[in-house]
Length: 198
Image (cartoon, one colour):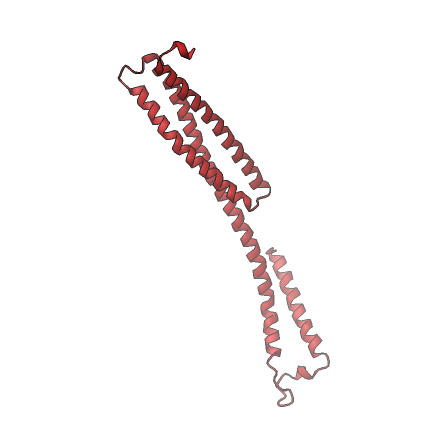
């Protein structure tokens, strides 16, 4: 069929084949994005960020490859010379419409991959917030315990003055201080649980 036509039709056939192949690439990118989205929603892992950046680079490279061909097809359609006849221009307009579809898909997938990146970063941020919350709760529990331990760590001699920690001479002084610390910790844990902080 191609042999019966002129060189301008051969040019159209080549461009049409390239654009059809672009749709295969678009489908491949769509599958990758869908897979990444499922993984991100189910069980996001560290390697996903690398895959998101890889697909983003592919989309950017693909976009840079597609735009010049779109412009070339548009120029060929508007060409007033006799190199491209009117029948071939009709075919080229059809290919140009397909190119617009390809570009629209690329733009959509670029937005989607940016959305996936934001979703991943939001997940990492939430995870970090959970870790920080646990560490803050632990630190908050230890603040009064450190205060009690600091008071009893001053080592004032109870024999020098009746006001110098008389409980240091008590038989149950050490277990009592540990008990006070334990009670404080339990009260704070109960308070945090009641507030729904963990």
